[in-house]
Length: 128
Image (cartoon, rainbow, N blue to C red; front, side):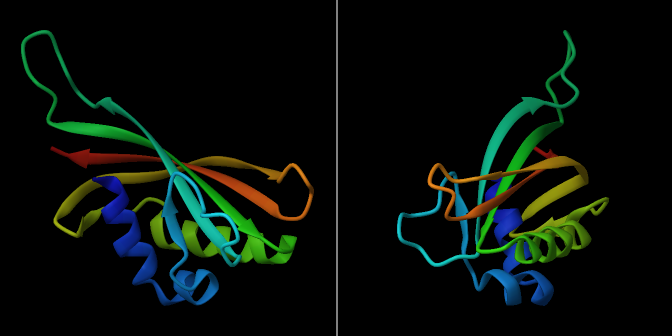
């Protein structure tokens, strides 16, 4: 569910899409794909469940792996995504988001050291 929301927001953002050219993938980036590209993974938990009532929203812990050829590219994509998403809310692709919060990140590389990666973490609360 949250993937459709993110794809809609990020691909429709000129600042982000000019940098990634539509390369936004769930879970992993297909081998031999052009870079830069972004893959995202999701972990879901109920937002406000109690012993007597169902939850009315879910929390999605989203990790975005931003892959690129150089560090300046990673910085630019990370900044554009953060500007588009951090502390925002709204509806896109029929999905209503209560709040998005940036939670930090880390740098890494692939096992051969050919590409750089910026891991960016977000908490996204979505109405059921």
